[in-house]
Amino acid sequence: MKYLLLINTPAPDSTEERPAGEPTVEEFMAYEKAVTDAGVRLDGNALDLVNATTVRVRVDGERVVTDGPFAETREIVGGYYLLDVPDLDAALDWAARCPGARYGTVEVRTVWEPNQS
Image (cartoon, rainbow, N blue to C red; front, top):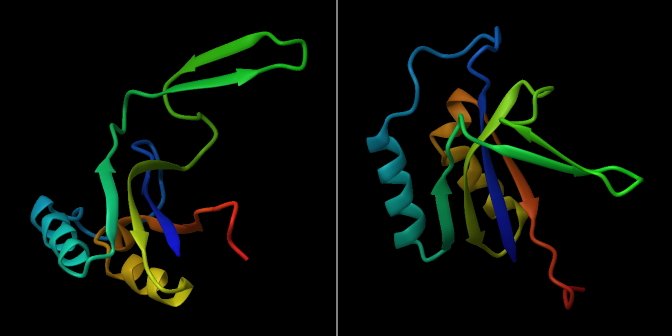
């Protein structure tokens, strides 16, 4: 099954208590190597934490475009991994190993495929 691991980091202005430091590039590179070597990585990228655009379409069809990540959130999506693993338990194991889980959160979402039963 395919799972999307959304790596969330606290917003820059968040007052949420955080562990000392942030995950290092080397930690993420080691994780990248681990998921690649295990043959479960389908895709993954870091995302820009500052530049984002939000689009909403109102009931009347008016398009509303807002610069920046969604303003009412305490976390920002900083990156993702798309994995193909046997089940949710395996996806959760990989999520727990992700360096981002120590600094923020890793949300695990099942990728919906129309022919899944």
